[in-house]
Image 1 (spheres, rainbow, N blue to C red):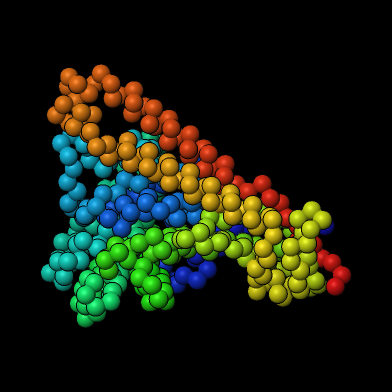
Image 2 (image 1 turned 180 degrees about the vertical axis):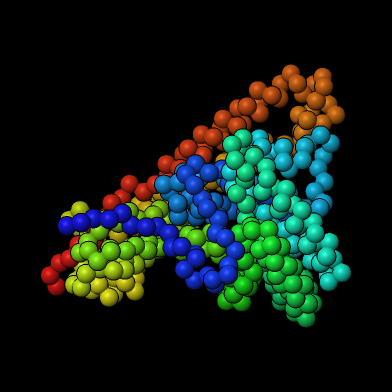
Length: 387
């Protein structure tokens, strides 16, 4: 029997229009840096995006650094004295890939602000795409769209009419961002509609104030962003048997959702030879169905194997959260005035450089731990059987 390794991602280009912007390429060992506004900054609080990214692409051993800063705009990124420009920190992190999050704050300027936004954004895209932050080649970049606001119950935030007007502006700026990205040959990750669908589809609020997402909101937004990056839906394996009568399945780890929502595993296998197939883990049968049903996709029922994948996924997210906190404390140190500011000389130079090195070492160790957790050791077989 011929075995094939299951593909754990579904190329987003399959559903994209012919004239779509280029896709963002992720490579083994990439350091991915998030740069932009409050929406981007708050991803680190919940860990869903990074743990989902590592689980979706376990063989790439990716790492993530969140360099976003609340209220940043394309042409306005104030920092404390001697903190350094964004370029300096992207170089310090050896960024291979930069995800840029802009347009939400700028949208408050309405139609009058669009020309300046387009110009500033185009200038920023051209600048970042030429930088050799990793010391070897220009950064690969992608621009992420703004997300909509949410109308909350009366008395909490803006009323529905005001939110509708805000979302017209936000969509306009998202469309302007897409046009600028296309003009500059930069991949555009349009998540506005996906997040809007989540806001409309959930009975409970997904924001804390109509603007900033809560934990459940970031879980939804992370799923939308991962899909835009070309990942299969979390907990999904999409594979092709290429006309064969079986293959090898390597299931992903399953980071849980908000409130411990259990991660589920769904497996879809196309191009199986006609017949009936069983998914087996050793001598244990996890699921069985016809080739047609496998092509549609089957959810693997609760077993000890699923429980183990979920526990590993939970461990992965916990490591990601720990690493993100340590990196934030190093990147945005509360005593920065002694590290890089006015009291660096003569006070900070005596004690802080070695401490910063140790922070970097700890963050790197947690990167390695997260990469190891993201790689499932499970190997299952899908093979043709008699009914």
